[in-house]
Every structure is written in C-alpha cells, then in structure tokens.
Amino acid sequence: MELSNFIRRSGLAIMALVLSAVLLPACGGDSKKEASSQSTPISNVLGASTQSDVADPAERGPYAVGVTEMTFEKTSVTTNQPRALRTVIWYPAGEGAKGATLDDTLAAVVDAEQARDAGPLPIIVWSHGASGDYPYASPYYATHLASHGFIVVAPQHPGNNKAECQTSTGCTPEGMVDSYVNRPADLLFTVAEMSKLNDDPSSPFYQMLDMNRIGVSGHSFGGNTTVRMSETPVGAPFSAALAMAPCTGEATAPADTVTMPLLIMAGDRDTRCVSSKDQAFFDGISNSLPHFLLDFPRAGHSTFGQKCPLPLPELACGPDDLAIEKAHHFINLYATAFFKTYVAGETGYSAYLDQAAAADDPDVVFTAHIP
Image (cartoon, rainbow, N blue to C red; front, side, top):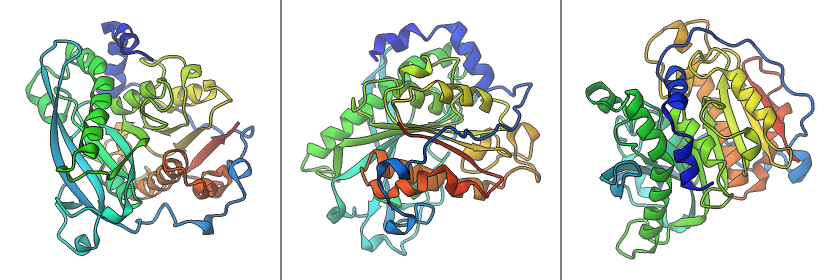
C-alpha cells in the first residue's frame, strides 16, 4: 500500500475512534469467545516437526543480549520538518556479555560486543503505543527475541511517547493524527537506515543484518501501525507481522487486504481495544494467508506491556486477572515461534504454532489458520 493511502485514511474522524480506544478508558468489555474449530494445525502443513526438534521458544535463547541507541533523522510526512527517531536496538551479544551487568531499564548489556559469528541475523522492527513509556515499554519481549537470534529495532515516534504526551500536544486529536500518518514512514525509514549501517564497514552492525528477513511488531497504537504495515506488499520490506491489542477495524483497511502472515494477540478484558473486533478482523483475513489469534480470556490492555501500572479493573491488573508473568510466557513463546517460522525461515518451530498445544490451559485460546 502506498503512503498516500495511509494519509487518505488519517482524518480526525478516524483518529477519534483510535483515541477513544487506545488512550481513554472504554465503557464496555468483551465476552469470552470460543476457539475456531475450522483451522488446520500448522504442523500438518509445514512438515512433521515436533517440539523436541528445536529450542523451546518460551525459554530464554542461547545468546546474551546487548543494547545500543542511535538517532536517525528523517523529514516529517506532515510538516516537512526534521523528525528525529531515537532508536533503541537489542541484539545477540558475544560470550563476553554473559554475566555482565544489565541496564536496569533496557534489561541488556549496553554496547556489548555483538555475536558476530551468528550474523547476518533477521530483524524485528517494534512500534510502541500511544503515550508509551518509550523505550522501556516491553524489554521482556525485545530481549527474549534477541536472545533467540533476532535484532530488535525500536524507533521512537516523536510527539507520541509518555514523556511528550505529558508535556506537549502529542496526544491531542491533532497530535494523534500527525502520529498516525507519520508512523508507517518512521518504520520504513528506520529499516532503510539499518540497511545503510549494514553496508557501512565502520558500523557495529556491518554485515550483521539480513535485510531480506524482516518482521514488524507493536502494541496498542503500535499494534495498529503493525496491522497497517501488514497491508503493504509482502517483503517491502516486511514479511510477517505481530500485533498486540491493535484496535483493529477503526483505522485499518479491511482484513482481506492483509498480504502477509499475521499474528494478533488480544485480551478479553481489554476495554480499550476490545478483543471481539480483533476476532472479527481475524475472521476476515484471506484464507490464502497464514494467520493466528492468541487470546487471553483474563487479560487486558496492559498485560502486553512490561508491567501492570495500577491494579485497576480497566487495565486487568487485579488479583483475579491473568498474572502478567504467565501472559509474558505465552507472548514470548508464540512470538518467537511465529517469527522463527515466517521471518527467520526455521520451519521446525511450526510445531509450537499448533493450536492443540495450548488446548489444556484455560488462560490461553490459540487459533491457527493455515491455507
């Protein structure tokens, strides 16, 4: 999809819906839904792999994790003014990083030497939510993927993170529209800049990146951005997308325009981005594409973040809600298996995407559709 189409869909009327869903507490919840009985287990399609064939994607991977920060400057799509993308990058680190002190907020070793014998490595680009506590929203997720051999690149969307929303106009309706239009271009520009680093002998990422294996992921407003990116031509530059609590429907194209494998994660107690809409979007995706839905009956909007900020019912952070540690276990399991399969090309992980694998756990409803 061309960038002009993103701009065409970015009016205030659309963003009012996104605002009410992503930023403001909603009035209603969502009821428990049943897992689809019409889907085909992926292991029947991609080969007779078993879970013992590969490393457990729920467990930490073999690599220590390093982290660094860079800033890429682009031109705003809306104002033509400079737009600085402060970008945090998590990556597999060398043996020297094992046992080293981790940064308290980024949960990795700052500027650690890379695991250069492992490259070139696949990339996951991460988009944070509106008013997200960038870059600290989801280190549990980024470091887990990096430990399994992915380079996770997380650009800041200027004017739309927690600090800016508390002190500026970034989270007004006008600011949300501006972010809505700029976010896809932010991600594409970040990929282009990483490609330059991959070709630069003076760069720490020189020849470490596989620019033909790139996935995209995000939470909330970032999840919505991820769904919109899944509507672009596959491989330009993304080949798979994973969206957490993405508020599908209001500010995306119809589900049948998705062009790549897509995994949606949702919580039935999310009153900001209700899971029934994600279910409806999932059901509308073309049957010619692999697509997956991971639903947590007792989870809410904050379950996908680093921690539950307050024990409030609308955030599903109470004693009767799903423990965030358990949710993170399954988020990391399915995300790693999904990206290993559809970005890294390691089809041995397909056994973990079989919907029967979680059938005995009432806290998890995993639905898989494979053509």
